[in-house]
Amino acid sequence: MAGTKISYRGDMMPEPTLRRLPWYLAYVSMLRARNVEYVSSTAIAKEINVEASQIAKDLSFLNIRGKTRIGYAVAALERVLRSYLGFTSEHNAVMIGVGSLGRALITDSGLTRYGLDIVAGFDVNPQVVGRTIGNVPVFDIAELPKMRTSFGADIAIIAVPVDSAQEVADLAIASGAKALWNFTPFRIRTAEGIVVQNTSIYAHLAVMYNRLNSLNPD
Amino acid sequence: MAGTKISYRGDMMPEPTLRRLPWYLAYVSMLRARNVEYVSSTAIAKEINVEASQIAKDLSFLNIRGKTRIGYAVAALERVLRSYLGFTSEHNAVMIGVGSLGRALITDSGLTRYGLDIVAGFDVNPQVVGRTIGNVPVFDIAELPKMRTSFGADIAIIAVPVDSAQEVADLAIASGAKALWNFTPFRIRTAEGIVVQNTSIYAHLAVMYNRLNSLNPD
Image (cartoon, rainbow over all chains, first blue to last red; front, side, top):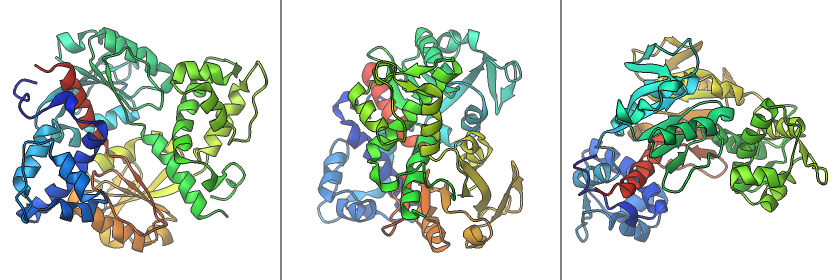
């Protein structure tokens, strides 16, 4: 990740702020596509349901200043946000579990646009091992230890059945993974110092079904 | 959603509880696969990093009781959780935006196992309109108003570029959508009474990159 030092300020940013920045990025990307030149925190607040003072505070972590009465230059704000969020750097990752979801994530070119380069897949299924999915070669899980040495990957994406999640996580960490992106609903335990992000797609469904059902109790 | 009345208790459950239940489900599914018969909230707590008292409280919302010293019957707990979470019912949904991510979600058979049935796709791109992706027909977005009438879908999944997110959300609601599952990082505004779940896959990347960078500041 050489060259990203300047745009990151690492551990200074609180996680809630970090989670809001992509919302601002999405909004200013839209403004730029519409050729809007300047935007104020008040204008962003109107669209995004976050207080203008909070937005100004969040953006104060970045290397950009708004102008009084005019606001932030849209193109510059988009560029700074994208870089700060790490979307302009390349981060190598491996996919552990090349079933339905793993394959879907490999073929989602959106991840590449957000700086994630899936360089190899690992699985136990002899029907996928040895194959190539969207340019990504799939290896036997036994070869995972080469994720860092051969592929320079810091990030392991976990898309295996829940009952294998902890086991492959342990193996990934032993193989040098520094971050796990966990797509299973299993709560993976790790030693301190390993970054874990949980994206449990299916758990969001449960909340949606429950709230839908409250709307239509009969 | 006829027949699901008994297993839901709708609006009584707080969202944090609802979000934890899938973790418990994942864990007990694993136990069942390993032929474990009983599990206590203390044993779940050890694996999942939630206090045992909180787990007991969360599970008290369900129609199941643990036995003193023995705990919950694993198979029954799994069945009750799966049903309560709505994963055993069928919920029709349409996919708006059949680009890379939309297509990936359509072909992810995991969603079906969690009760989501994607019955149609909608897009503006003439290269995908009229095609069928994994048994799912793709229509022009102009035909979205038939999502409820022809397809009985309450749920619209939004996987379009950010600058179209609000527009297609408005169209989906006008077409009868009661819930939006938003995969864009755009913060969609809706009237009260519409269920919105945000799953911004790419935003999780930002947190992961930032934390990784804090580990390796140089």
